[in-house]
Amino acid sequence: MRAASTLVLTLCACGLVAGQQPRSNALADSDLAALRTLHAAALASDYAYERVAYLTDSIGPRLTGSPQYAAAVQYVASELRKLGLDVRLQPVQVPRWERGEERAELVAYPGQAGEAIQRLVVTALGGSVATPPEGITAEVVAVRSFDELEALGAERVAGKIVVFNQPFDQRLAEAGHAGEAYGQSVAYRSNGAVAAARLGAIASLVRSVGGAEYRLPHTGGTSYTEGVPRIPAGALSAEDAALVERLAKRGPVRLRLVLTPRTLPDATDHNVIGDLKGSERPDEVVIVSGHLDSWDLGTGAIDDAAGVAVAMEVANLVKQAGLRPKRTIRVVAWAAEEPGLFGSRRYVKEYASELRKHAGAIEMDLGAAHPIGIEIGGAPSIAEVLAPVAALLRRSGAGMLRTGELAGSDIIALGIEGVPTFAPLQDTRRYFDYHHTPADTLDKVSPVELRENAAVITVLAYALANLPEMLPHTPRPRPAWLESRLRAGERAHFPFLPRRVSSP
Ligand SMILES: [Zn+2]
Image (tube, rainbow, N blue to C red; front, side, top):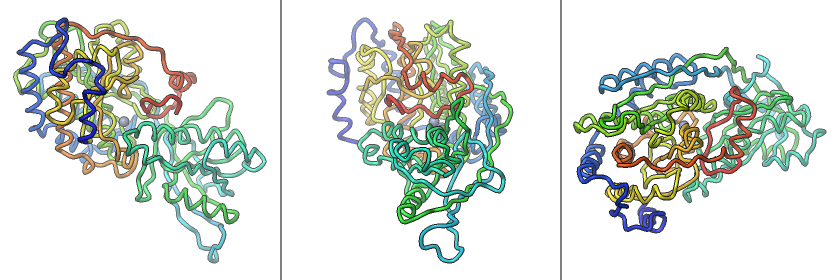
């Protein structure tokens, strides 16, 4: 990551030499000393890793509305109380969906030996409707894009199972644009079932999103639209989607698909909100956060127990150092991010009148790998104010400041209201190999890199809490892609919102 850190001065919008800061909103020397203390302490602490380990190994997958999610709420709340925080559980009404049986097999294909079948690796997409218990069997149509599907037209698609074999652009991810690569593929996971159903297809299967090469299925939310039949939607492993496409080029392929997920009545989950009260301006708030829910195939270690644990670590380190922030540092573990940011949208509604007193919101939700700096969602002048913070973080390779559109996932809802938002800029080259797959487990979290992330977020949070003045709020219109996702109303399912993607 050396190349990236040399970009600090060129990409920093500040125009100042790092280490200087504008006089009007400068941290006191005592605050800068506290930041150095916190930075060193973060790089030596195992607190966050131990919390990730408990959330993943002991509690396990934390699907929205599940007993494990409720157990995770109790765990995080009790740990925050141990740190002396003022803890509130904010109720959030959430959709509930459970995975059932899932099976896919090729029952007829060119060159088939007798009655041999080929088992495929498949998983249901979040929110998918079920097939009949005995499954559906139909001929396959394999395409790479929506355009290809449209060109086939209803007469060649009706009654068939559509397989979208759109490859994930791993080279784009490796060039530092994993969010963009994800957005390109998620378009199919999110909208594939609707596009296929419009032409009369009876099921839709996408190639698993991500760069994994171990025949792993990748789940995630899918969408339906009013007036279009809801058809079962799943994901094949990348290898199996490619296999189906190759065989379909040689002749007719028939596939049997069994998916039996269930949609249950709404449930009540909770955002966990823990306040470390500010000494001088307790009504002004800095949020540090991650989302506590996860998909159910793995144990949600990098997505996003790590984000929650690092937010808890901020409170732990500040307490351990005997410091008291001037503003309130609020640790938030968001509910129901995966089915559609339900927890954070609930928060924005209930705290609407207090949002202008939110000095900033931080979230880590792109894994736990090495951070190279901070992504800023807000006014370009914020980078100037944070120049001394960046100078300190350069010690652990995280000195880059980049001002983007909207940082984070849950905190997008706050960013739209004008609250400055922040996320660690991370090495995401391998993130989508594991994200939403059975392999999102504790071993994917490097203890050293988790500490580096804790250092970034702790130093940033404490700086935001102690700046003499609030940072400027810059309300922004909802991006069009978000608007269209929300149009169907509060109950709409829409997947994790990749950043910097104009139209996923
Ligand atoms: Zn996430």
